[in-house]
Length: 412
Image (cartoon, rainbow, N blue to C red; front, side):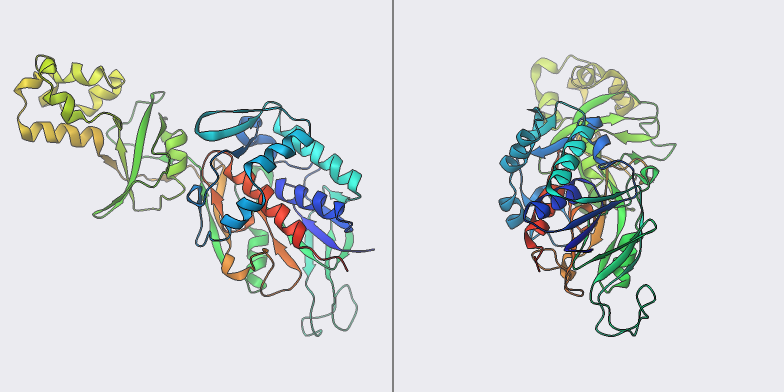
C-alpha cells in the first residue's frame, strides 16, 4: 500500500493530524516508538493534562519567528480545544491564568484520540521506531531506495522492520525534552541534513540551579508570589506577560511557575532578578509613620516569610527601628527586596524540562508548515521552533499545528 501520508509521532499533534486527515478520506500511517500513543501527553500537567488556555496570544509563545501563530490560533481556538474535549467525553475545569485542565488522566485523552484514529481507518505502527527515511528524489544520485534503481517518487521508511511508503510525510516527533521517555533530537538533526534551518533544542519550563554558596541557600520549601526579571549588563527586562507568579525555593535553586516561565527566556550569563514584593513598594512601607517604631526585621516578616526576611535583611539594619533609617539605608533595603540579583549556575536540564525551545525554523516552512525544501514534507508540534509558556500553550500548539497540517495534506 502507498499511503497518502505517513506521520511520525503519536503525540497530540500526530494523533489529531492522523484523525483529521483520515476523516478527510486520506490513507494514513501513524508511527511511534512507544507501545501506547501519547507517552508525553500522559504525564503533562501532573498527569491531568493542561490542555489549553483562555488567553491565546502570540506573546504566550517564544521562537525566532512566531508570525504564523495568529492564523494558527484563529483556525484552532480555545473553543475548538474545548469542543475536542467534549467530543472525547472528557470533563475539564478552568484554573488560574486561564488554564484549562482535564479532570481525568491525560492518558485517557490519548487513548480516545487513538480510538477515533482507528475508527477513521488509520493504520498504527506502534512500538516501532521510524528509520532509514528516504525522501523523493528527481534522480538516483543519492542511491537506490530499498535496493531499486531510478528516481524515488515517494517517501519511504522503515517502521521497525516494516517498509512504509507514502506520498507525504509528517514529522510530529516532538523535542528532546524528557529523554527518559525516549525523546531525542534525532529527527531534528535529520531535518537539518535535508536542508532545513534548525535551532538546537534547549530545556525550558525547567527549574534553575543556583551556586552552592548563593545568599539564599537553605530556604527550600518556601513559596511566595514574585515578579522575575532577567539582566545582562545594564539591560533589565521583565518578560513574563502575566507579571506575578509563585516561586518555590528548592534544595538546588528555585522552581515554581514564575521560574519555569522565566527559563523560557533565560540564557547562560544572564542574572535572575527577583522582586519579592511586586505589589507593594517597600519604600512606601518604610515611609509610613505608623511603621516608624517597628524593627526593620519585624516590618519585613509581616510581608515576607520569616526565614526569607531574615536572610534578605542586612544584619546592620535588622534590629534598628524603621524611623532610624536614613535614605541610603532605605534604598539599599528596597533594592534587596525588589531587585535581588543572582547569576544561576544553569538549569535542571532536559530530564526535568517540561518542554524544549528550538526546532525547525519557520524560515524553512510555508505558512501551512510544509517544507520549502522537500514538497510533501510537513512538520507540526514541538519539533517546530514555537514553544509556549506555562499554562496549556504547548499542547494547544500541538493540536493547532496538527489540525493545520491535516487540512494541508493533499489527496491524490
